Structures are given as C-alpha cells and as structure tokens.
Amino acid sequence: MTRRLKVLTVFGTRPEAIKMAPVVKALQQEPDYFESVLCVTAQHRQMLDQVLHLFDLTPNIDLDLMRPDQDLYDLTSRVLLAMRDVLKQTKPDVVLVHGDTTTTMAASLASFYGQIPVGHVEAGLRTYDKYYPFPEEINRVVTDSIASLYFAPTELSKQNLLKLSVPENAIYLTGNTVIDALLYTLEKTREIALPVQLDPKKRMLLVTVHRRENLGEPMAEICEALKTIVQTNPDVEMVLPMHLNPNVRKTVQNVLSDVDRVHLIEPQDYAPFCQLLNHCYLALTDSGGIQEEAPSLSKPVLVLRDETERPEAVEMGTVKLVGPHREKILQETQKLLDDPDAYHQMARAVNPYGDGHAAERTIQALKGFIS
Image 1 (spheres, one colour):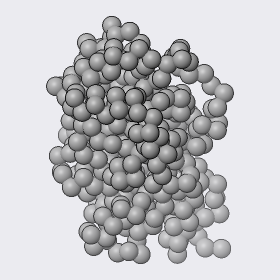
Image 2 (cartoon, rainbow, N blue to C red):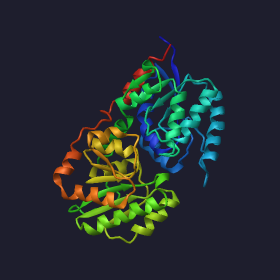
Image 3 (cartoon, one colour):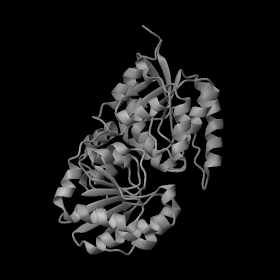
Image 4 (tube, rainbow, N blue to C red):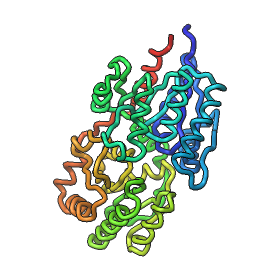
C-alpha cells in the first residue's frame, strides 16, 4: 500500500464552499488514499456556515478571519499570516484551493512560500482584463501561476492554461464541481418549501446582484430596469435575495422596496436558493456560479456584466451578456418573456459545464500525485 496523501483544502466564501464540498466529501470517502484536512478562513462567516451545514462538513481548522468593514489589504494579510501557521501545523503534501477569491490567492501564495504544491480547482478562467472582475481576475492569474495541478472545468479553460505554457500533463479536464453540488442539493432537499409565497399563475424571475464593479450607478440602473420589467408585465413577479453588502442593499431597497410583485428577501441558504433557481422562469445575475448552475436546469440566464470569464455558455446560447445597462436588460428580458421560440432556444441549449462527476475526476487525478 502506498502512503496516504495529506490534502489540505482551504476556502473561505460560500461559492467556494459549494464548489469544494463535493471534492472534500470525495476525499473523505477514500481514507485509504487520502488524509483530508479542511481549513476555512471564514472570509464570509454566516454565508459559509450555511453551506458547511448543508453538506455535513466540519472544518478541522476555522480561522474565523471575517471582520467588519475589512478591505482587501486587511483580508489578504490576515489570510497570508494565518496560513503560515496552518501550513507549519498540518504539513500537507498538497493544498487544494478553488477559483478566484482573496482566500484562494493568499493561501496559494502562502503555500508557495512554504514550497508546498497547490492544486487549483476551477483553473484557467479568464477575462484578460485585470480590473474586470476586480479583484478576481488577478486572484486567479496569481493562483494559476503558482499551482502545480490544474483542474480545468472546460476545454476552453484548458486552452487558456496551455496559452500560459502550463504543461499539458498538469491539466485535468474535470467539468465543474458546482454541477455536482447542485444535483446533490436538489436531490437531498426536494421536499423543502420555497422561501417566499409565489403566485403559481405568474412567471418568476430570479435576480442576484452583488459585484463590486456594479456598485453605485450601475446597480441603480439595473434596479430601474427590474422595476420597469415588473411594472410592464403583470404576469411576472420577481425574487431578489439581497446580498449582505450594505451598499448593495441600500440601492436595491431604494428602488425596489415599494414595487408590487417584487420580493426582496434575505440571502438564502444554498438549498432554498437551488429550489428558487429550479422554480424560476429565467435568471438575471452578475454571479459566476449561476451562469453554470442554471443551464443544468434549462433556465436562460441574462448576465448583468459586460464580460464573463465563463464564455462557454454564451457560445452555446444558454447565457447572454446584457451588462448593467437599463435598455439592454429591458430589451433582452422582454424578448424572452414575449417570444417562446427565443426562450426555448436558450432553455434547451447544451450545458457545457459538466455531468455531475467533476469531483470524482478530481480525486482520480490526485491519486496520480501519490508517490
């Protein structure tokens, strides 16, 4: 029997937790091959804890780094210094990180300083604009420059890595673990009630908006478009779980709080949110994860951004970029509400993000790293 590989998985936000939970659970199911250690930074405390509970995950190390009004300087330095001690304590063979958060970048840098190999789940995404999205684009560039193992969700992300001269034998095409998480959650929680009372005779539009680049005037323009959509379509109602960021909530509430058939609700646990996504007619979002999840449920997505690091679904036709632009949002939403052919063309497009077995492929790749 070969020695077990000690794998330290590090994440800090709800999106990371959702996408890494299937990987951590898969590691735990292979105790003959892996010693799994889970460390959370709690970059997002409350929203992270919801996901840990859903997937029955208990961190071995909880750094609890969230502070009121912390900025990127504060968070990066806290993660970097805390990870120095974690790495000395745990002595992992490999560190697994996900995506493009500040936790991911700083944990990767700490691992590099400790000369510990990094495996990057959801590697290779790019907009090729270092300020869009900010700071995520540079976070993933830094992480990809450090990593030794690259778990690419799509062929395009693999090609992006090859352009950077990443050795092809270090890249593993896995699909996206968010599909694993989505299918698991829908199956586990199929009996739960929706978190808001909806009219079954109306079409529900699900909206999420939170990106830094959309704060201020872009957010106001998005909300004005949403207001007009509901007011001009009496058979439509809208559900908008409000992000915890007070700058987001202030704008959303100022424009939409008194609009009939608009349900402003608190951020949802992942399970009820998946049920909302499964129930909706279409989604409008600036989130990355929803661009991947909604196509699995045959839901068209209008992306409230001018660029996306996930262009595969745009190319396949299930996602369309509308930006934070009032007229474009109105035009494309109304088209999907009025034209059944346009709607079904998007709803029936092929999902490019995987089949729900990405975590299994990730674990098989890690087995090859055992010496």
